[in-house]
Amino acid sequence: MNLLHRSLARLSFSVLSLAALAAPALSQPQISAQSSPQISAQSMLLAYGDYAYLVSLDSRSPINVRDDASTRAYARHIGYAGDRVEVLDRSVGADGYMWFFVRFTVSNATGWVRGDFVSLEDY
Image: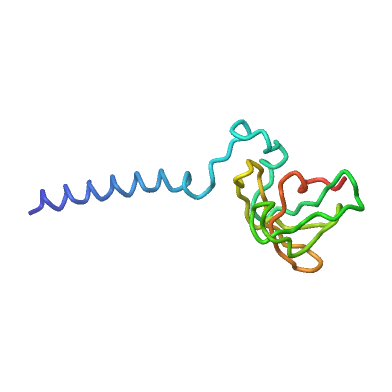
């Protein structure tokens, strides 16, 4: 009986060790800027809980804040260049762009913004 218990203990330790090694890989999406040309190096730096800013070439042009990570999703809100947001999640959309689920720090409105409109720096 003692030998059986030791074998089971070793087996369960091995399974737990493998699970612990795999866990970090499962917790963060594996995203590579090389796999999608629409994902900028700047987008790769943004992480959950970071504060960022909306950016645009035309500061007067509204930026759509959507219900899902797609340009086909309904734009429930709009933002403008310079608006400060908190990054709550990120995802690569079917269009190959990085999308960020953000919360506006002033209004608390939430939604998805395409990655090329989100930056760590206020322009």
